[in-house]
Image (tube, rainbow, N blue to C red; front, side, top):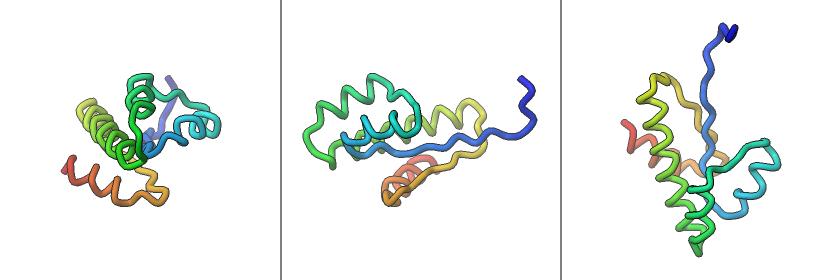
Length: 90
């Protein structure tokens, strides 16, 4: 494709319902319907954070399984979430 530099995935945890509408508007992205449906069904931000953490762990495992050597996590004040993700991966 003509890309001659490494592409490093940037991963941001989704930890509350508000992000379901804010993030697509800011970053022009689509949130997977499965993730959106589960998070919209949750009643608390704590439950959404658990779902977002589990999703991020699974996504990270899939990227690693497909040969991605480096993952970049945006913590944005949620360092515990990233700590939990990294602990689950290594």
